[in-house]
Image 1 (spheres, rainbow, N blue to C red):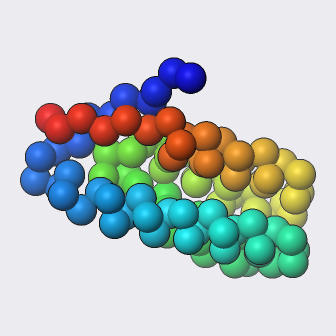
Image 2: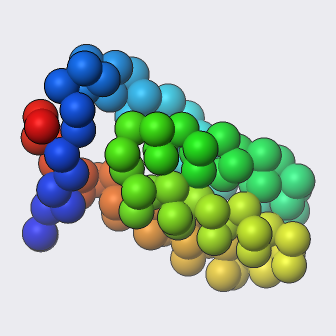
Length: 99
């Protein structure tokens, strides 16, 4: 499997393990929200990911979260699940290097 290589500023790289651990919790919460058709919760969580991922330089994650946030208004569970799978894939294949 090909890794997704992202360069992170040396000043913030120390915070990344905790940040990524919190995204695991977000994945669980998004999954539950989708099962319960709680699209507002999906929107809230993905909005948070969108902003915070951008601060860390994880722009692909931020972009996926942005799309998911916007699409939550359409309430298309199947499509939202496909975007969630993209987030899971991204996080599973992320390789961080210090810049």
